[in-house]
Length: 200
Image (cartoon, rainbow, N blue to C red; front, side, top):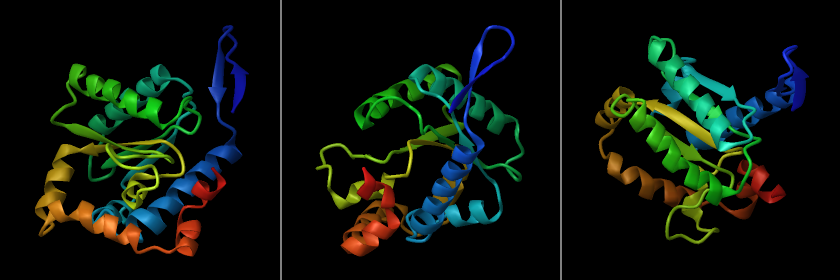
């Protein structure tokens, strides 16, 4: 990320094009090989195939900047025709702090949804390289279902979620099924699917 003088004495953070391309490739690979490839999200394939998923690589380094970018994405989705743009992934590769800090920020995300009147229209799912569900050990296989190459906020339309749930025979069984998938992976498969974990 580089600083560019806007001409008004303000330095705007702009991500290098090569890094942006690298981040987009990592996220797309995660979607294709893990989320879709392992069947973790039964309805993700349709949105990706129809090119109705937007990926935004944010330069935010603070919670305030991340929430500003999130609000911009919510406004963009609200104004878009869902037949052309259904959902958005906000990537936060430069966000300061560890998973605990990221997890605490989610309370502010929920507050933003509430105060801006987005509840009932949108929900936000979260992913992180070190994601950990409550009351689990860091190395629990189930945590891998939400481990992504970079911190992510996934904005979903409530109508899309409701329709997807209705189309699945037993949606409540998805989390248990996904944990079993992760438990079935051997060390070689884990290294191939989650290379960023072995580098951390």
